[in-house]
Length: 174
Ligand code: FES
Ligand code: FES
Image (cartoon, rainbow, N blue to C red; front, side, top):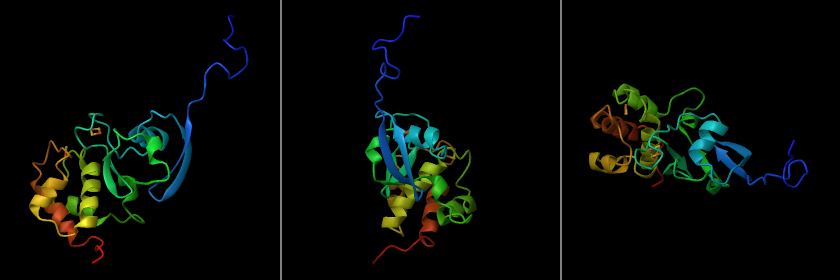
């Protein structure tokens, strides 16, 4: 047996992990994570929250979108350690007590879900929009979801659903 350099148990490989304390879907999590771990990897692999989809991994499709402090981010491009102390919302955190969020319901009612791959990211992007602007125009919706690619629906039903949900969402402060 050659033995490890340094001889002592646990001295060969430095532990580069950092403690990350973050609120995810209203619950505080505290885990050791590698500094190069993305938020997407942290959510899917460490927390088992697979609603954020992994697709391009390069910021090109929006399938991995989650909200960080209320703003949509591509979680494939964000380091988990950069979310220290922040509030992360994934699609799993949207329904309350088994009741769908108005956006989720509107996507179903308006036929805005086909394969569903883009849907979690699309809905979270829409939530950020409606939280700021509960009655967006078609153009404002198009602009907001420009970074979320849907290969199935042609976007018309998605836009209808988002606008419909605006009327039933939580009203913004005036
Ligand atoms: S997987 Fe993150 S933008 Fe495509
Ligand atoms: S519903 Fe299939 S990619 Fe949008």
